[in-house]
Image (cartoon, rainbow, N blue to C red; front, side, top):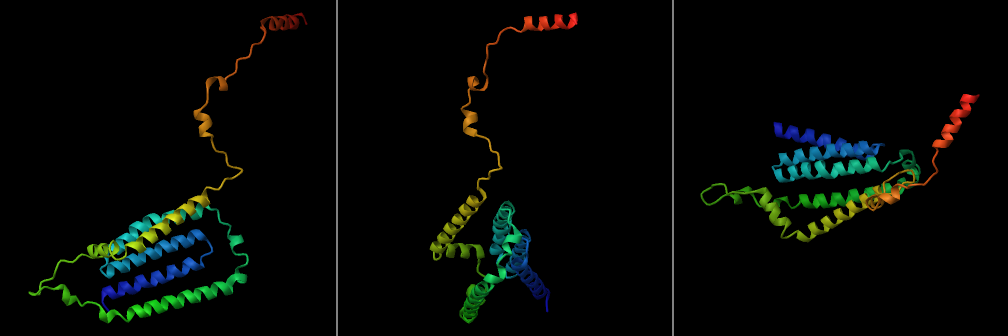
Length: 218
């Protein structure tokens, strides 16, 4: 076994462990942190497969932006773990059935995809008549497929992510009774006569003098 195979098994083992901890962690913050760890291991596997663009995008987009957003949202929602655990075993049969169905569908899709590996173009087709390697870019080929053949699915995915972002913002902007926020409009429209009131009162110098004389007499 060479070094590349050893790294593949190591990254795969860490990825499986982090994926298991995502669904078994009681603390939502710990689940998000394990998901970030899983994304890093998946990016390393992409780099081993010479898919540099996918690996870098997984690190920059998901680990650097999406997962940080998830972490802040989970921390701001103030999730009560004791309330989440209530009724777990009551809904467990339905959740287990749905999980088994998803696993079965993924297995069917993956096994069907493995059966088409023999139909892929061999590496020899990337060579010219003289046997020289033709210039090939994974990023260019992926971009051509994304913005030509798969343009509509990408637009649908972008719309779904936009809706998810709006929903996350709406969940965190709930009004709280104990929160005190400034009235920006009232501060901008404030006038001097509304903030300071002048009251006309009689002079108090005579009263102060009479009080002083009375104390001296005593």
